[in-house]
Image (cartoon, rainbow, N blue to C red):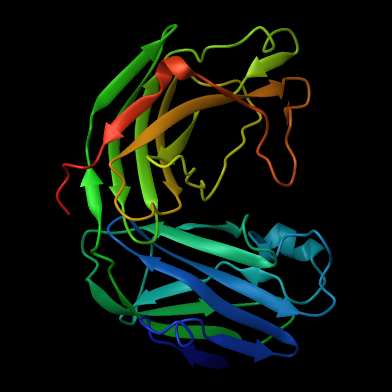
Length: 282
């Protein structure tokens, strides 16, 4: 059985529809569609959910271990009634508690406007939660392709592209070489892969939407494609600030990692890059 909710993309209240079944409510929020991807968040509300536990089920084996009600399975997506065959990334939302996020890169043949159908199943509930939402691409954006490179101690990176929209900032970087290390990143401690902060001309740090950790030694070649929060207004420039974390290679724990911090950042001033935006046409 399907229980459907619909909304309008231009109306904040209507664009966040919710459906309730057997004490579990799913609410659709943070829907984004631009030149880079389609993404949304499904928030889960209800009583008696296990504390500090994932809200999603990613495979059948894990489902056998989850006897409770209310775990969200990977949704099925339809564009104008046609099911998407490609899978996007799906998992717990790191920013919103009791919520999961789905994200898929935009395909060339997707129209600028369409009706998005999201069908989600939840463990312990027979009904399918179905959302139908009209979607329109956000075209108010700025695209910059600096193709600029910085080098230090055998490590180099090239900013291939920056994409600014009203909902996010996308950074695409290629890097090569061994990451530099400080005197504190020796012995059992090592430098992580290189990460990148983005700061605007007023000193505001853009928040990275997802921060990946890897239980392995850093590679010597990376293709980075990450999303950050949107810039405010049109800054004259942004600064890319590369940094590493300090990792204990015995257990892959990160020095300074807390609920409010990804870890103690070691910035590399020699690798900072200022990218001008004041002459870019919208």
